[in-house]
Image (cartoon, rainbow, N blue to C red; front, top):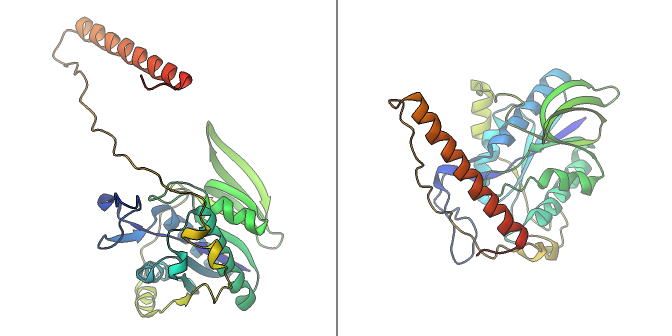
Length: 283
């Protein structure tokens, strides 16, 4: 069985900047890392490979510099890495991204055999949409396990797995069958440190690089031209002002009274904001 891990190279979150003309992230000259949740997906894939002998491929879409992310991913002891890189892929929203990734995975299937499990992080720290995993599940017609915090059991013979996933008000246990897409959270595991042999191999490894012609992609469905989503405006929220401080040196009765007044004030502000939202007014 083959597993594909889809990762994304993202700007280091301490160095995020926005181009005010295009409203896109500035990536040039900004240190990049593998998206943190994708690291958990890589660790899960490495564990499944070690336990069951599966082949694991890592795929990303991005500029040439994304090769470095793939090299870092190969330090997990995976089999092959593919970079989907082409100017036609630039400016993609999640619809165009899943289109391109799905064609890359289908080319892998033709050349390396069927893919039964696709893993990725629950969301990327730069886009925060959480849509790529579900989008891939839709394009392939695979079962979807989103926000996975634990893989409780997996039977490679029947293709059945039991997962624990986070939902709005707690957790949910789900039994599902392959083929499937899992999007994982930071609670799933702790990524390993590469051992020396895998680290050396990763440094020397050269990923496959495919353009839109290699994966038989329609340029009109890729990148900017294949993206119905447009960023109209970005805003930086104003810095928060410090609140009232209830000193520990005050008498308990006085401190309690101040805290109660602060809570009443907060509740009143929240109520006004809720009414404004309901009425569709900013005034």
